[in-house]
Image (cartoon, rainbow over all chains, first blue to last red; front, top):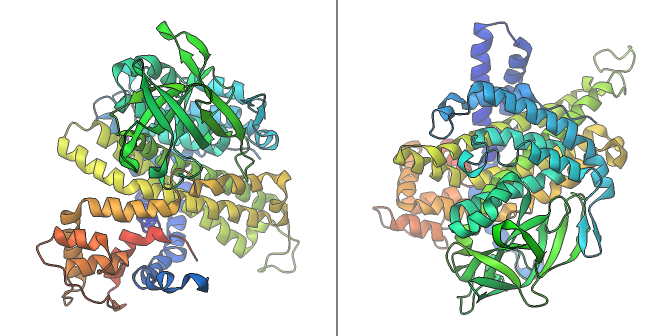
Amino acid sequence: MGNTLGGYYLAKSAIIAHQHINETAQHREFFQAKLVTARFYAEHVLPHCVALAITVTEGTAMPGAMAEDGF
Amino acid sequence: MAYSPPLADIRFVMQRLVGLERLAALPGYETATADIVDAVLDQAAKIAAEVFAPINLSGDNTGALHENGSVVMPPGFRDAYRAFIEGGWNGLPVAAERGGQGLPWSVAMPVQEMLQSANLSLALCTLLNQGAIEAVETHANDEIKAKFLAKLVSGEWTGTMNLTEPQAGSDVGAVRCRAIPAFERYLVTGQKIFISYGDHDLTENIAHLVLARLPGAPEGTRGLSLFIVPKRLIKDHGVLGEKNDITVVSIEHKLGQHASPTCVLNFGDRSGAVGYLVGEENGGMAAMFTMMNNARIGVGIQGHGLMERAYQAARDYAKTRVQSRDIRTPKDAPVTIIHHPDVRRMLLWMKAHTEAARALAYSTAAIIDTAKRSPDAAQKEAAQTRVDLLTPVVKAWLTDLANEVTSMAVQVFGGMGYVEETGVAQYMRDARVLAIYEGTNGIQANDLLFRKLARAKARRSARCWMRCARCCPNSRASPATCLARSSGISPTRSRVCRRAAAGSSRKPRLMRPQRPPLRRRSCALWAIRSAAIISPNRR
């Protein structure tokens, strides 16, 4: 949930940064960095959300299935 | 390593992402104009960088000491705390009529971030004060408020939170401390452990908020009452009397946060420690939850603060440490390690998560402000529901990330990070307990699933059903199965499902959990949104 929310907020930052860059040349580097950061997060972090979904929906049985002596 | 408050990033999130104008429009927050907020941030940056940060490493080396039955704080901590309260920082988010500054939580949050980045051990004390103020303000009667509130708001006295006992950790209902009524007060007896700032020499008095059981109280959490027990007794007109019957038995030797004294306290070894009831008899959990929810958000911001500090350290080191040649220009001279792809990946990973964490924390603060001050009842209630939902996410996600980011900072430093003298190892040690105290992150996951998602049962199950129906139109699964899939719990065993189904128009069909086809990606995304803090970052 946190990972997904993080993506949401960085996407919002990217939109704000994009608008800013289109409107003015002030502090361009700062806002450019926001775009790179958001895109990095989308490529390096968000894919884990899809993988986590499999764990969340499929991965509940085994912790309960292990006998206590099996640990 | 110097700490430089990231004011440009802080202002970006506050002004552009969250938007302060909306908050200044809320009744009671009129003072939060852009000029005032700007000045507050500048001053907070100053006290964090110039007063709190310089004693972080030395505080870790010396640690708090237990001498002759009381705690001696490391050198410099008393002066730093004095500067903090003299600046009026302790009462920042407290209403002006209570002696505070009347600023929104949205402003208190970045101030806390900077203090936590600068010196986590010392800033923990200020975080506990805020929670204690909120609990007393919300639940105590006028007599107790008159005794304690002004001193707590000014920071002349500090507040602590006493839940844990040797047999009662995550299971708060197992608390055994007792309280008996005596002359319009109560006498508290029993032992509390893991009490952060349970004793110190920063202030002349401490207000302990203690969970204990009255005679004949029911078992479990329903039989707990909250008491405020001062370190020194308070006579008429607020004059301090002799010491209360509280013994500081010892302080813990810990992995990190060495400058924050973690105490074992014995209440009532002689005749009983004098305390006052806060809130209703047997209503202690509700009252303590006011403090805990406040502190859970606070611990989340501790995590974020450490992430920022560790990122800064790693970034600055990567820009100066020369090692190996650039893979694109192998014939040229060796370069600083920030030129190497994997180091850049690590730095970006830290930066991206730190910024995402800040955005989540500040946005949550803005929702807290709306929940506290909105004149529109419906908006207020909706905001409170959202705060309740986000609290465990802020706590668990930010503190799990703090562990990963501080560990990654050590990785960027390489062997130099593993030795203590570079200072970056301290952040990793300090971070470790954040995922444990104030409700372990496993407890946060339980809270999210079983309380927060189940609370709005009918409404939420209907919404889940709508979403699933939209994204898998051919699915004929009942809301119970749907919720079971999204929470990953079998419908036959899940209380959530039974509750959800009870609130829906369709009867639950108890079927074997089906393997959801992977092409239903949006269904899977809903599943993460409802449940993924169970395992947020295990990779």
